[in-house]
Amino acid sequence: MDSWIVKRIRTTSLRRVVVWSLALVGGVLLATSDHRYIANFLRGPYRLAQADLDSIRDVTQTPRYYARVAGDRVIDTGIRQYTIHTQNGIETSREESGAYNAFAVGNRYLVVRTAGDDSQIAEGKLAPWPEDLEQQLFDTKQMRALRSNFYPFYLDSDSFRRPGFAVIGVGILFLLLFAWQALPALRAWRDPERHPLAKRIAQWGDPIGVAAGAEQEFDHPLLKAKGGWRLGNKYFTRSTFFTFNVLRFQDVLWGYKKITKHSVNFIPTGKSYEAIVACYGATATIPGKEKSVNEVLNFVQQRAPWAIYGYSDDLVAAFNKRRQEFARTVEQRRQEWADKQT
Image (cartoon, rainbow, N blue to C red; front, side):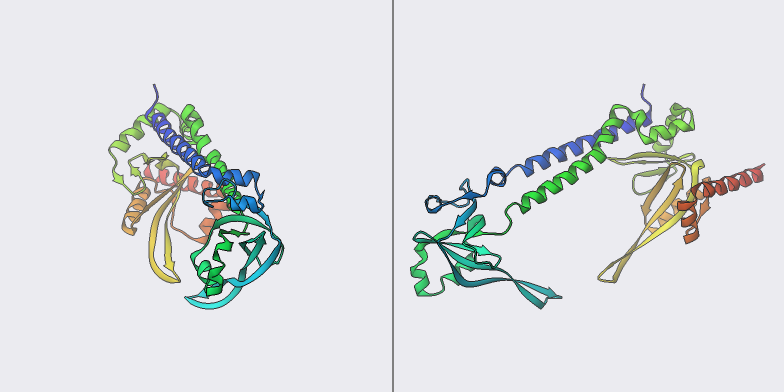
């Protein structure tokens, strides 16, 4: 029969597996939902002649819209696109980011947004006209008379595949994250004894007895803290939807209050507090208001008075760089404390 700790490990691990799997399925469905884009990404650009352009009735539905078009000649419309840089709402500079040319394709014209070159071949996405572009180009009676000679869509030569490559990059990162988070959870669900917590408790001896004691203290805690933490006489346990952990007070090495200052545009907006309790094998981070954090640290200190408390750069250096020496110091303090009790 599984112990309480094994059951909690299975439950939290299963939740993580389910949520990550749902996220993976949802991500795949979302990434592959635009079948038209995927087909053009893989097979385009398509070489479109005048007959192909003439046959397009709705550019938002045409199956081939990643196009390569050759013009008989290129006409500069004089319309430019600028990128404006601002600071605190004030323009600091601007630079030309695109130009609009008219490609003569037979007896019709296709407007092409380019990076400023005059090449007679353009490659990009066919899209509906931007409203402001139409207003600028057909701002005279003479141009409005020629409106029917222009295709009702234009070609944007900005990189067509860039969004696709971005999605692929995000997908690869997500798969790596999935492998990092979901696969260990799957292994822990199938075999809880492989979970780091189960391995740590096995070193304590009598896992069944530890589980019974931890469950009793979890159900009837002496102190409740934020972040799912419950503190008893021997153990302090964290249980949330995705996480579960059990630590012993006898394993406490160091405890201190962490204060984080928050600001927006260098204007202080407040502080947050955490009780950091470092133990053999794991560290507890218990958030809360300053009063609550102080209460947690006092509670821990009462049950592990031999540990080191407080924060300094020297303690950080000793704990991070000379961990074994730090632990020996704590064990010496434990022995001195035990001697005083006899």
